[in-house]
Amino acid sequence: MPKIKTVRGIENRKVVSQKEWLAARRKLLVKEKKFSKLRDELNLQRRKLPWVKIERDYVFDGPEGNVTLADLFCGKSQLIIYHFMFGPGWKEGCEHCSFWADHFDSVNAHIGQRDTAFVVVSRAPLTEIEPFKKRMGWQFK
Amino acid sequence: MSFTPEQIKSGVLPYNYSKFKMKIDELQGVSACYRDRNGAIYHTYSSYARGIDLMNTTYNFLDLTAKGRDENPDSTQDWVRYHDEYKRRSNERSANDD
Image 1 (cartoon, one colour):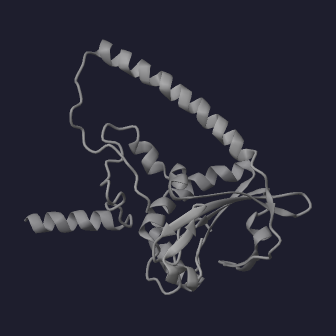
Image 2 (cartoon, chains in turn red, brown; image 1 turned 180 degrees about the vertical axis):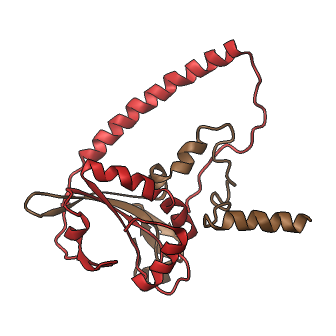
């Protein structure tokens, strides 16, 4: 994993009055709003990225048999694919991907309402994936 | 995202649109595609590494707290386990304390 710099611990925090706290909070809010606008701008630029037509016929082994890339859309016009690290012969899926995957089911219930399908793909055969998926209690495809 | 045996052997992998020095055969990532009315499919977006932080709700929650993600800077996710192992580990710990 790439190194991420985060602030550790809670050392050297000042304890102040409610009035002082409010002033500091308002100051941060200005920055937060600026960041939200910047993020909106970035999201817009992401949406405006050019597209690449997929010419290759991808076939996946799904719980209901072989499916094409088109099938994964489930009648929707958008598809999000998460590549989950689970190679052939591994006893368990990647621990970090599992951390991510623990959030997927709750999101999946909502993005389906926004013309978007979601799937998780791995390189391991389905027979190796399914027992692990069952253990983790995941419902997503 | 996965890599060819030759790429793994070289120890330099194309990841997150640059080269990444590591000897493993695959890495996580997310992609988005669009399918038009005629059935044509387009690749519209892909992201890797910290680009998928957005998909991690736990991090978004922790970012609201004083301690934040509070991770080891040299090994950020060393605290992460399979969710069914947190309880077992804490049980083991309290059993050892007895």
